[in-house]
Length: 287
Image 1 (cartoon, rainbow, N blue to C red):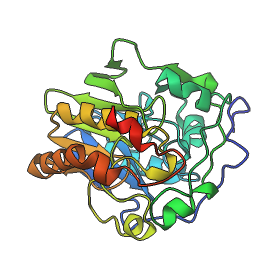
Image 2: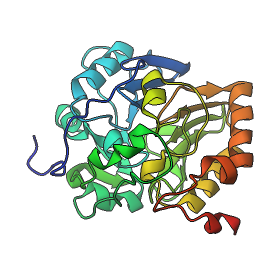
Image 3: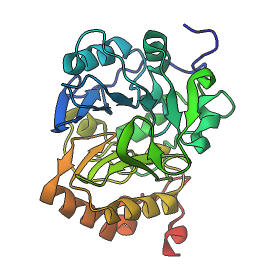
Image 4: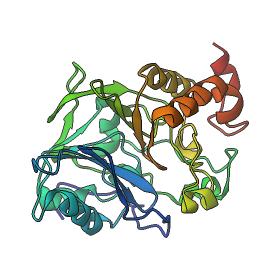
């Protein structure tokens, strides 16, 4: 491991998986959703062209599986042009150092995420008291210390462009984390959501394991600003996406996506914000 890079002291593998583990879905011709245990990574690039980027970096100890999944799509010894991060929670950066040691590519993240990725600052603690299922109760076991990948870390361009993805724009979608971003391509309305909203009830252990498909706001146990989370969901709804890949759950598209996003925005305050939890301030959503 590169001595300039390090995981937090609490980084460890977790015995969490789902029935979708190691499944790769071609959502549109050049965008693939790959499930690593309980989280989705995204490959963007047409297989015939062999040029691609990797979005997010999965669970701890998963690098060999992620590399093999990339090679199934793009061929042996393939190498992404970059790793793009939606945010820096452990399940989205859990194997990033091993991947960087293998590929040696730049990593892009929003500047507000950089303190969590350069060793300076840990995220707010997960909230096991939040309304939700068993996975929420187990959330204090999840790694939370900052990692340090400063030697590879770069900010997304301030003009909204996305490195190596000419037709995509990044959209700041905070709430789940301060520098959370989603990526959107207007010409076919493809949306890479991250955890701004998800398509599984991520706080429920049973529904996470079975990947029961249903629209939800961001994972409750790590979301610290529900007012910002609501504004981010509204922002993504206004983009009118035709296909969406979320950080957790199955891809959605077409009428199913439209109807579910309409429901999410309409019912967000009453249904999708937890009734209680240390980061829940219902009055904030009234303004």
